[in-house]
Length: 519
Image (cartoon, rainbow, N blue to C red; front, side, top):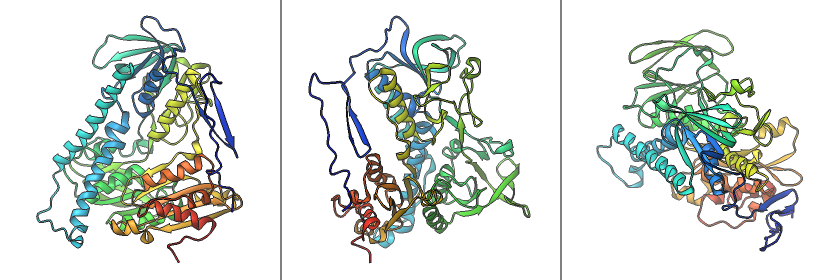
């Protein structure tokens, strides 16, 4: 039996009066047990000065602000939107999940309930009520963050924040000319990102016919024909919402495959499932222009590698070709703060910008995946570095990604293609949800779990799931990878029966031996 890392992990607990930081290492693993710093104040604060000013109230910014206040630092957060939570909570992750949930329930009622013995007559969708429910969710959560600010003592400024020097932020309140100056020992930039246009802006977004993800979440009726430019996460999630509700959806993707960051085997299987729902795909195709009318558009498209051009008709065109850092009016140029070729703020391994060790940037503003949970982890790590209470740990090798379609996709670590390209010897274990009793009982038996482990050490290298609750199940594998577990560690861990998590266990078993419930 290979070494079971989880089983032999020893934990050191710090008794009162002992050293402030203990670290236990086991086969390359480490974690720290830190003292509470709620009552400590790391920097002198007087009058209107702050220890930390955070510019941006999205997942990275508001989490950083709360954590700073919890560590005893006098903290302010500046956000111009007027509601906290950033793109994610207001016009991204959260509202999209709300409408995805509603659209999936509608499909279940329309296509699946009758064969389960549930009869529904006169089924219809009320888009106005759907939008109100979405907004109710958003409002509840944004107000919740404001409550957390009040409870933790974070001062919240509504307005646009701009760097004026290395220790101050100028706040212009929304709709007002009067400005406020906030002095700070440390400044954290967390202004997030915005939707990218097509290269050359050949199809300008007007949020009427040519829409961004924000517009796609606010449609007041189901379009007859929707074209989605971009076969990435945003395009597929929102395209599937409106397909579920009855729109004819065609996805146009420049590359010859969907979802380049996703494991190839998973991406191919996913495309087949999406095609079963009626979504059409034009892969290896680029959009070169559009004729836009009052309530429809004609897209001019052509093969990416050359060939005969053709046209596509649509009532709504969703441009979903990625996102770019939002640095408008932030004051970077005036201070000489460096950005890279795609507009990301350049930082060191402590999130500091060159030449200004007290100015830091996190989240979508800097390198790495544009994910809310990545920004949150960076926000906490950044503040811990400022307060001097830890190493500020972020493991970029174990940041999961999820696509919240039906079925869902979730992944962490390496793809099989990456391992092959790097010459890494590996074992692969897969297990289908069709062989999982809970998936069968729930009538959600589509998809599979795929686990990749090092051939010699059995250490987990990557994992991919397509199927029910993939976004929840990936947490088991993220935790294992975070602590350097072997596939056998998870394969020998007892999980409840009947649960979907048994599919993860059996995929891990398939890496080092054989699963039980598959011949």
